[in-house]
Image (cartoon, rainbow, N blue to C red; front, top):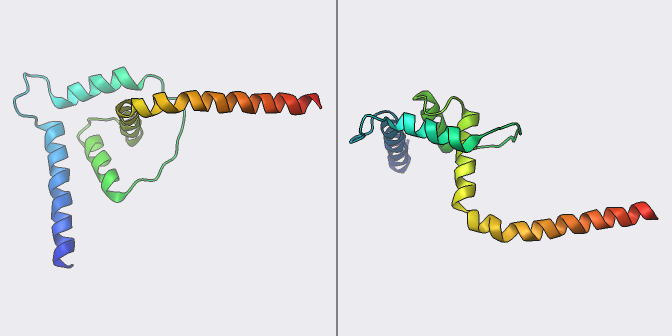
Length: 120
């Protein structure tokens, strides 16, 4: 393994260790563990999850999710992925607010086209 590859591997290992430490061993927390805070936050944000979405992740992203599942911050990969998708959507709320009116117009135009074709 080259020196560059070794440094990259060490950096990933350090990042994984940091995630695990944050999830299981927070410092300065007044009796409430980060696990409890994450689980409370998840419970409030995920709601009903009845839709299935298949996705592909990089090895590095999967290691991060697996680390959180391993320390029981999440019950499953699915729960972790749903949480982070929800967080990403909330973080880019401005993007969705800009896009959704256009999406609604497109849907209305498609419906008009279907109705127009069914009359002929």
